[in-house]
Amino acid sequence: MATTASPSLLVPLLFFARLSGLAVALLVLFWALAFKSSFLPSSLSQQDLIYSVLHPLLMVIGFILLSGEAILVHRWLPGSTGFKKLVHLSLQGVALASGIFGIWTKFQGKDGIVANFYSLHSWMGLICISLFGAQWLIGFLNFWHRGEVRRARINILPWHIFLGLYTYALAIATAETGLLEKLTFIQTKRNVSKHNTESMVVNSLGLGLALLSGFVILAAVSPKYQTLQTKLVYSQTRCLSS
Ligand code: HEM
Image 1 (cartoon, protein in one colour):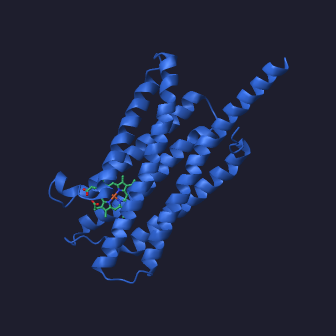
Image 2: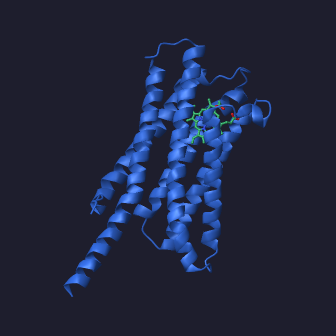
Image 3: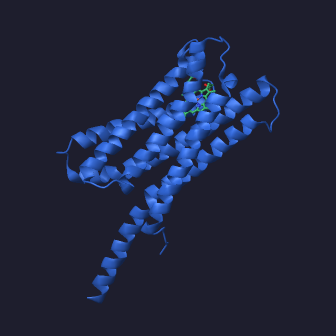
């Protein structure tokens, strides 16, 4: 039988998830504050500059970091299942609002919706936020519809987990394409060296996101399956020995 991480791995996994999350937050803040000139829009207006800086900040800190934290809630938060669900739903709600606002900032100063969606990044972003929104709505309805047949809720759960983790991974992949796109703009427009400080910061940010997603997803799946598996093996052993 395949072995999975033991529940005792949860503490270091949560620790490394938070550590990489903190590094990601600091890196994106540092990038936005120290390299403001990279975000200067063609209009040169202060308002457009704010919108341009807000997009990566809202998408990385508000959308990715918060939704990762919401995924982890079920792994560490003490209290009743109802309480955990409420915290999970609220954090995901704030993440969704940040994501919608973050995408909205990119519509500013451009002509028409269709004109904005030309890149792989924008297409992936649109799919990601739509899936996230649909997932949140279904979770919300499910949460408030407590009278719903228990069997139906049990059937929905594996799909909820799959779609949640898939959307989270898609958000990471979308952010990576956004970073790459922005870096390409910077390097071609300003003809800067490929080994400059800003490129190192953005590369580290991308690497931080890749590490973070690994820790969050592993923390989300491992202990649960281990517990179920252990229970299964334990009950089978008892059946055989009795
Ligand atoms: C989960 C994270 C992200 C999502 C869901 C997302 C989504 C989107 C969407 C839907 C658009 C198209 C909107 C428009 O152009 O009007 C867009 C544009 C853009 N985003 Fe992101 N984004 C994310 C993270 C990032 C990050 C981290 C950067 C890094 C700076 C970035 C850079 C850009 C740029 C430069 C554009 C304008 C060019 C384009 O449309 O491709 N994005 N984003």
